Length: 362
Image (cartoon, rainbow, N blue to C red; front, side, top):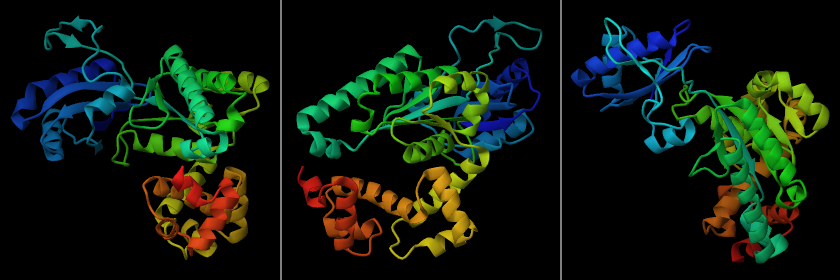
């Protein structure tokens, strides 16, 4: 899929450009399958079956006179899950004109709203409540999420844990609120957290909807229990209804643009360095270009944790994944950035209330 910046372009103009691609596609061994056009944001996206990126560039240089801004490799199933189709919409009327026969014109933005929901690790649930109740809690959670996705026309993203795509910000927010309401009595037991973000499928990230999903997960990771954390773009798109909702619901929390920028840099620093046992506060300050006091204050405001606390929490959450993959305790300790197995065990027990051995043996 490629991205074109087309400020001021109409749906008809993009349809005609796509028609030119169809005429020339065989010259470059390409198959121009369909397109999406977001007139309001001046963006167009083409789904093309091509041997390589060079072929797409050459095709568009011939038909449009300009290369796409970005090209990313996509899986058709992922495209269908996020965007709902992998061909032209079936209900679009064709138009005949003097130049283009059978021209299909449609305005279908690829902009999507992503809802991420997260609960406690399954093994921790079993250890906390027993196998029977844990299964019941997870089943109830999944049933309610699926029910609300269907009700609000959300698309569950298979292969991702509890991730859904929506065309409408209103539907996404209402879905999240209904999930929160119906699970309110269980929220603390299952550690329910929800985040909402939105964006385009193709960016410099080079992963289909990569930037959107990444920030959505970042937001969910710092969200408080039974809270809905929303990004600045969702807050802006929903501003007409936001005040009305927040007057009734105090569990929706927006972050502003500067907090979003800080969070992305902070989480990327964590991702790049969490395995390094000697990476500490001074290294964070250097990477983030902030003083210790400024970094501490900003981290507490945005994430609710100090930098040391956030680093420890991130490492512990990663350790759960490592232990589930049959890593030994010593191996997990060092792979997740702890200086020793004994210190890891101490931190693990303090955070989760159990020994790592109990987690492994469950």
